[in-house]
Image (cartoon, rainbow, N blue to C red):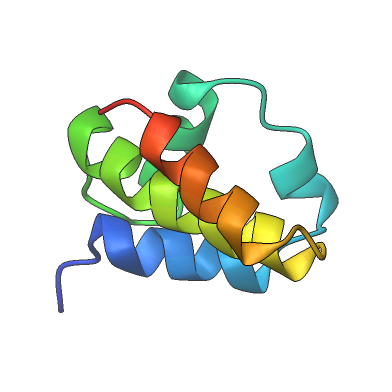
Amino acid sequence: MLKKTAEDFVNYLIVQDNSKEILSLKNHDQVLELAKAKGYEINLAELQREMKRLVTFSLSRKGVPQWVVDRMSVDVHD
């Protein structure tokens, strides 16, 4: 079986964008618990790197201008 990575998990989150399961997550611990329950082998550092991509995707999808998205993604800390 292939190892499921943080990138794979964020792709899963993107596909599930507005599901109740995703919208109910309140913090990184809950996100990591969900990842583990779904069979993903990731740690917090990997998740945080990939979450930047999720935030960028989500903002651009909601119609936020690209220059704002770019500026905000710079402010997201590792």
